Amino acid sequence: MSQVSASRWFGPAGLSAGDDGRILDAQAPSIGLTVDVGTGLFLPVIRDAARLDLGDLADAVVALRMKALRGRLREEDMAGMNVLVALNDTPGVTVARPIIPPGVTCALSLPDVHREVVLDGDRGVRERTVADLGLAYDHRLVNGAQAGAYLAALGDALQR
Image (cartoon, rainbow, N blue to C red; front, top):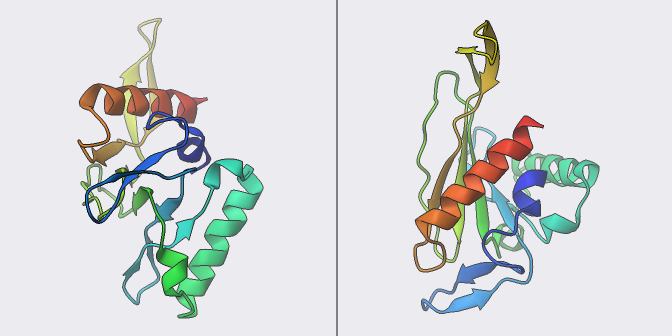
């Protein structure tokens, strides 16, 4: 999530599409996160996520999950999202395609992590951990070249 919030591919301040189709300046990435604690799917939002360090971001995720678990999420906890991170961590799922909720610029899909065998630079064989990232986006706000460049940059950042 910290790499997602640090990304500026959708503009220096972030964009979202209003309910009436107008493009709005979102000021900062407000990241919605899929949360399912056995009582249904919720999309709570971490506002201005780019200003949070990794520890604060982790604390925010835990706090929202606990609110969901206790049935205490409110409408304001789920409002204002312009980027969605869809966690699809069911074992064996390598591809998932989220739907973009109204007003959201894009939905990043993070499926289950799996191991694969690859050839290294010395023609040796090694094993690596892989997550096949996916991105659904609003074409009124983002074009395919931007989305591809974002996924490539995010993948590079996650490998470091």
